[in-house]
Length: 297
Picture (cartoon, rainbow, N blue to C red):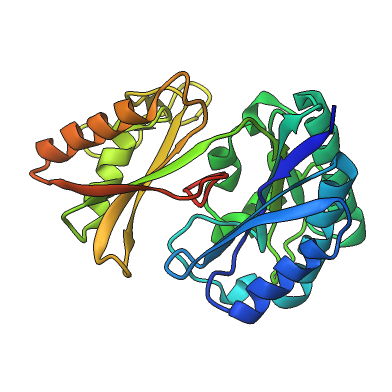
């Protein structure tokens, strides 16, 4: 059986065609790899590359793409709607054929170590490759984004899995891991208010929201951690944002296991939550036929 692995690296550049093309060319130059899709977004200022190939091929292609981004992207100047903490923000490996999740975990760790050793960038492992349960969630690792990264790296609790525990301003930090296929799905609303879209996202996503007291202050547990109120649906991640090209706010959703929560269930849930806020769902979109441009991949 042919061994095939999918890789979906997300880079924090969605506007400069020369940079986007240069990273794509770095992938195309690697043997035993096929670049399936390049999906840039100007508003999110982010591009998702989808490639598939042999385990060795995708590992090399991911590294070469990162090396090219290391030359061209400056995170100190980056602005965009999408959460991000690094130039190559996230790089997941997905088993397709003839490989196991354990194989993808091994690839993720090898690529993560190479990024840390050769490019000297901080690297965190997530999902199935995570070094601890607290680091499984991309959203938890990326909390605070690039702007909070320097302080996070100074905290021993957030020592990177690979690379230096020191901010590299042009790069930030990268998150590398192994995961299953996911579906990225956006639902459009008849409003430009991203706060309303995010309110819906907080209600439907598994992670929910931080519990607050009567004065609006976060409620803490005995260990000093924020208490969370879970959302409606398991295996669902979501945020709200405004897309200037559409002149609409969106609820941007990742279904990390469509068998647990199907797409049509999420759509109806968004519609119901929108009605509570006096809003109407005006449409929806799948971001890519292969993988995702969504809020967290």
